[in-house]
Length: 115
Image 1 (tube, rainbow, N blue to C red):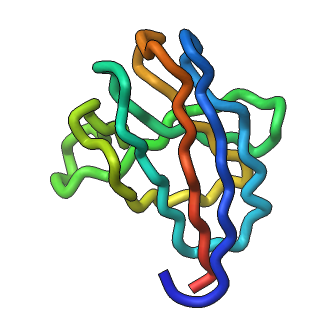
Image 2: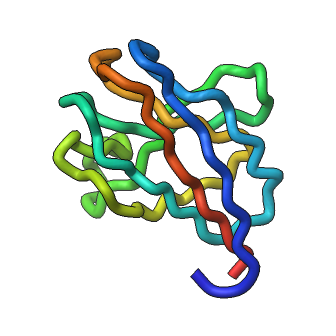
């Protein structure tokens, strides 16, 4: 990431399935999500909304095969202690689990840059 970087943090509480919404404010060209060392075998995915209290929907990416169905941006529980790039055009962002099996709360860092 180059240029000014804005950092956000959000936590998924123990036995919860999603974090609180992060207000990214918009205008970021690059977003990286820090996946911590996971304490359970649940997968991580991302959701967005245009309002803080709106319906959050999963992020999907286009398939390289024109006739294929897009697939969810989701990370297996073995992908931990790293940063992953995410293409986000929405203002509000949320991190979620496929199931609420975590034994401890998890804090995620989200880094945003304008270039």
